[in-house]
Length: 432
Ligand code: PLP
Image 1 (cartoon, rainbow, N blue to C red):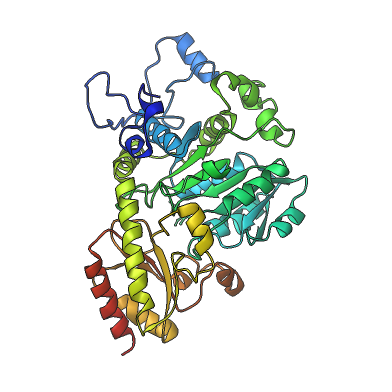
Image 2 (tube, rainbow, N blue to C red):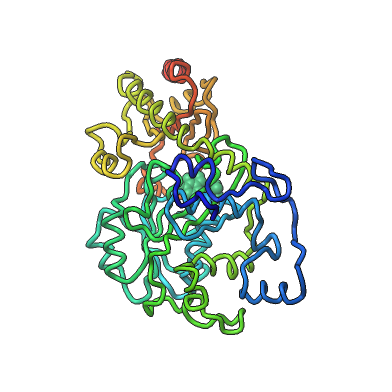
């Protein structure tokens, strides 16, 4: 941590957090350390680094100075004790769960997750012997019933993609903690405007590919550890028991002098070491560029989305609209509690005329891009039923809020008059 990190407000953290001027060159931008390995001072130095007796750079699969600044900045942004960057959002989600769950364990997850996470949990984790129960996060009694001695975490998205349902993080965290398990939340859709750790989340994951990047250029992910969960409560020998690959080192004991960082250290020195889903230093650099303007972009994304939602609500070719900023939306109260004056920048809507009108609409867009991404400076449109959620069954699609006529918009930071003109034109053409 640099001398000023502890004193900075969020917006300043986004510009300066975790960074010291480069000692060799004075470079003001974080240098891209495009290297695979680092020169050791001596054989003793190398041995100490390998035995985790000393922190420092060993090999790029474990750490990289450019990535370290990105990780520190993310930990500072969310109020965590440490962070681990990964090659993608999916890598971050996988590592966050695999760090505490193994064959025979169970997880309880929201039933409205991003399609990729849903498939990871329902298909790949099943093959690993990890059972994931899917349930509405508002069904606290149902979640309690599912929790047993094998349960290792509750997992939810702050703002569900694409259902735009908002999890009550405070209630979920309370329930999780009462049962001695952590709450893991995916905050991909609401970075900066929501800090889940303030509401009791223990681990926060992100697809950095989206708003953290902000320009649709790079794939990456990150895990932030709140440092608040007690991994020594008897339920997590996977972290607290002697680690065979480090000659019996106990993560919870060995790193106590540095704070409660056992979870995030283990994620790096066990899982990242072994699975190798490492971020490239160049992508970390691009995410640092993104973070510098995250607060400005998030505000503009959300303000623009509010205007576009109003336009769509008044359009006769729109069958229905899902936007948490409308008072009659089921998520409105939680939006006010967790997102304050914002409501995110995603909008779901259905087109009159169903799937055929939907196809014509997408094909008539000129300014707005038809892609499977979100959180880009550009406005993006997606048809989840044929893309992100195609691999799910009809029932699973409906649980995720995906109907055939559903179009998801990720509102960018362009002038809203241009976005509205494009939507208006495509909506008209969709009915011809
Ligand atoms: N989490 C959420 C909420 C997402 O929307 C996505 C991707 O769309 C991911 C995780 C996966 O991220 P990535 O595509 O960076 O692997």
